[in-house]
Image (cartoon, rainbow, N blue to C red; front, side, top):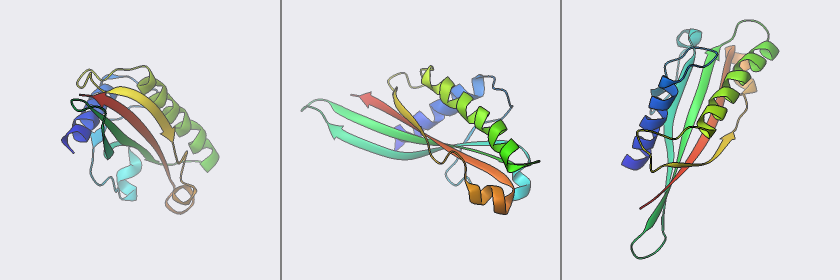
Length: 142
């Protein structure tokens, strides 16, 4: 699990160094569960999700690490406006990670990024908050 944690910390460091259209402080979290009042500010939670270990040869191993990045904020205005505005930020984060190597974990190479869900309709409707998740997969060989 330490490999997944180290990759997550490296993702946090890269996100923290970059300037996006909306300001936020990314944090690694085990349980990113916020009360509505806590979502008045934009929350970006980085969560180690999976670690796959595959033996390649007798002396080499492939590690696949998936990191989830949750983007959450209480909305003001219409759900449509919130999805458009916050969706732009989600796209910015995905595009940034596509073109950025992890300086704190250079062995990790990006495999893919999946945005699922794009947004959670129940959160928009019941909690007046936007939630989107980017799942980012990295591979390392040793």
